[in-house]
Image (cartoon, rainbow, N blue to C red; front, side):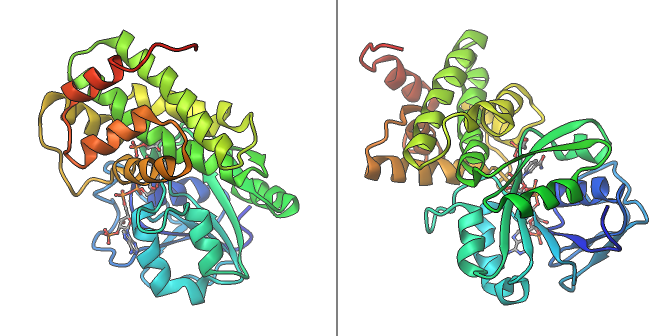
Length: 314
Ligand SMILES: NC(=O)C1=CN([C@@H]2O[C@H](COP(=O)(O)OP(=O)(O)OC[C@H]3O[C@@H](n4cnc5c(N)ncnc54)[C@H](OP(=O)(O)O)[C@@H]3O)[C@@H](O)[C@H]2O)C=CC1
Ligand SMILES: O=C(CO)COP(=O)(O)O
């Protein structure tokens, strides 16, 4: 239960709003946005009415568990403004990405900015619209401190939101960040008319490079086969509900894409390509997605480069 309004969500975009709606099943929830210009229905999450248990605010709530649902590339600026006020509380990162400016994950950014906080991660296959509609969803709650993780797992599970628990923060964060990159590649293949077989190849070989990168960064070997990793990759690479997939589709079709839409995989691909090159981790699909995001190559060239790679063992 929310224990009398002790849970709040920071970031009133689609995901933050959906989480607040779901958590309202447990009790009062605060929903903070820096400039909430709407009442009743969030234009980023159309068709969803806020329950009475959700209190919207532009003043940081006093709750002791805060879910941070600000996009990964905005988290640095958000923390510059608010870290001092957040320190010492339980901070649950809900962003899926790697910060391009620092190469750090959202949980690392939170831990460095708020050294007295308990940092956790909530991630896994979940579209905001599905969560807000109360459709059944399974997520992973990761926290290095097992007892804090256990407490948060119970505090944030609802009748429709089923949270599994792990201590592998690195693994689950990379699962969530990297699947967006591969989903862009999958969307590009579909958008370019390369077919479902090509998509299956990209998803499978993409998962291989996700696992390689995660292992090189210290993730536990099995984590990426769980909800955050394989689970979220399946969802994001196969559904046009995904913004990353749709962005890839637009690239494949040679169409423009609304720059106001949050597409975490584009900046994350660039961060991953940089880290992988520096650390000698082979990430061919991610490197090509970075090339697409930087408009250095087009989808036809990316496919030619992938097919021209040396033949190797699986
Ligand atoms: N949507 C989904 O289905 C899911 C999203 N996620 C993850 O959740 C994260 C957020 O995505 P999502 O909610 O969809 O994105 P949206 O584009 O819907 O919303 C982003 C929100 O972040 C706010 N924001 C941006 N910069 C700042 C800042 N510096 N300070 C405060 N608020 C800021 C924006 O506010 P403003 O309008 O003022 O700019 C906006 O409300 C991403 O990492 C995404 O991968 C995870 C699972 C599912
Ligand atoms: O993370 C998500 C689903 O788990 C949402 O994906 P998109 O950001 O691609 O819409």
